[in-house]
Image: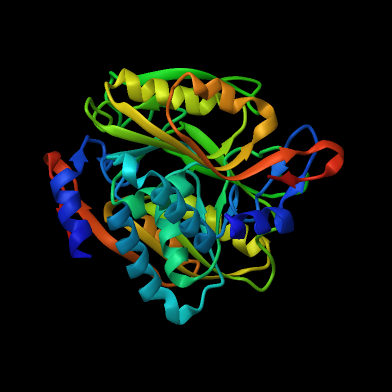
Length: 189
Length: 189
């Protein structure tokens, strides 16, 4: 997606250690026009898979997942990292390794809204190691739902996420692929 | 907003102690059509105030704030509750009391994206005590920005939020007002 790639090159910052800062349009401040365009494009790429629900993880996945769900005309559900008091006692929970939290985080979904027979499209802001997205796929399958695809805004191809997710056997689409961040550069495919 | 009110009455649950569960369309699963309609209506009500930015707090404020910002054609920024490694060392931070977290939470915004001269519309999912929204207003003013309005999806009128925010002297708009939750009921204005 050219508009996204141009924005990454203009406003993205390489902070070292593989950290790509896109706080100006995706992870802190959000550009709604760009997000809508990303959602439209992901919806277009997965329309034939006829998803019935979009699944993401809080926090930064919410914006692109909401935009994608809007263009698909289906609901979106975001996995929580802490169980709110409004959730039932019995939940779907999985644990994923976390870079930034130095340990693990929980991903929690209420079985009220993720059920057997659903066709789930997983959407997230980043695909890096793939751990979070793999955790979301486990939640969907634990609910008896089918994962029909994975769509991400930005993929960092050098962190092995594609390999981690290949065992799921579903199509993976990235709107922009960062192939190299060595030496302060941001190289896009 | 009639579609929102009907949805609250249909899918909202009164869990007692003033807790209104709307996890089916706002706080866990999101209805993108309804959220878009809420954003369009908030944008309509505040267009004359010419906001240059929408400000909200993670997590549940993101969806309605993004929809509102999209219809206004301006960026949206969400205050973080923990400082990510992508943020500069010097940030804008305020502390607000929290019901659910039994204590306080921090609201953190990068001064890169909230600056003097901006006209800020604060949007959140709920107005209850008003503490979070008041904290967002303090962040905006600490940045030298002007708060031009406050828009929320659901107001619980019996928790005093309106009074807490009245000192700010800005218009407050709620798309649905819950006036009574005694005895298991959900009464809308």
